[in-house]
Image (cartoon, rainbow, N blue to C red; front, side, top):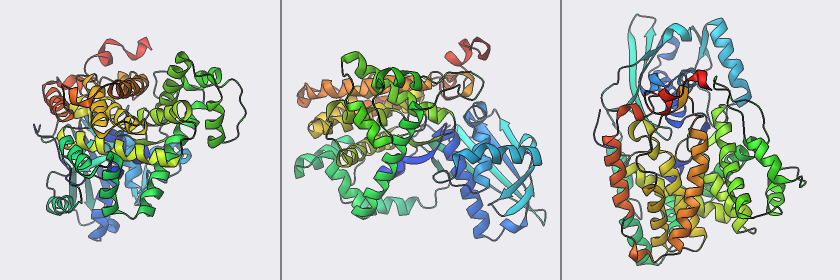
Length: 481
């Protein structure tokens, strides 16, 4: 496997924060979008009507934990050309059941072909060169010829092919950014030289790609899904799917904390929470409740926002809601906008300098990065300087270094759901520590902790990288649950 972190030169906030379907950005959203890309390639060459059958091969981590992460379902849905951003979550089980029972697939939503997931989706334990999350789609055409494409899901819903024909274009686009940033030191230099906040610098780059109106529209859509996932999780009880029989906890915690304050929608709900007790224990419980809620929705194939991944989707909305319901009762979309801009940029720094894929770097690449993103973003909202923003991000990641990814049963449930609560609390603590210090006295620069994280990822044993072949995944059996 490659020893160099995959780099995408021009990374927008909207690359780091993407609306999708759970439970995993690398194992669900990435393969889903790769399948849609395969369709596009067939369509562009007028080959779709000629397709007689489809074969899907999953390799490495996608195979080892693919069932638990719904990778096979994601590939099927992608081949129907369902859009993970807009498709009906409620209809997904019906679609999958129909395909499994009838053994047919409506390719691209229009071309009906025979398809049996049990025999035409193959789980291969071997790893492809280049990246642990490999997959191959093959179409057999009416003339007997075969067409295939190989993809790698590299975390956060990103997928690439080894031959990146658009690389030069992406480099050119990056170099035309008003403020090209590849390291934290460069970001801080822009802030210091122009006397601007991190969010202001990031916004100027985003305005090179989109109009201010489009940026606001996209950020509002992201925040709406984040808030909806918290709200849904807090109001849904029962057992999560997958066989572990994990009981949803956000519902019970929310019932105890909310204390019967009346509300009828998400906005009124926030106001109701603002009127509850805010003792230290209640604050801890509210933040944990927010994070647990999102990742319970994620674990049940619900709609969430990668932040930077699905498995870590609960940290950022939990910390935003902490700010809105505990720290600043006047907080509004302007605050959310700043938070998401800063968080997206911090995440991009980790993606450029290391990885956000648990299959490459363990859980430090998911919960660690999300905690760093949230810590830096909260620090700006709390009045911190750009240097303190970066310091908070560094503190949060420093105390996630080496965190393994060892999901029991290959499901994004244990220990993944709880880790979002812990990552959110660490982010808030890191923020406070940075605000209480002069950033000039920081001993560990953010760039150094990113570099260290990547080195740690390279040294980490493969069984702790989302393969379910080590740690809790082997010491706690499904029968124990």
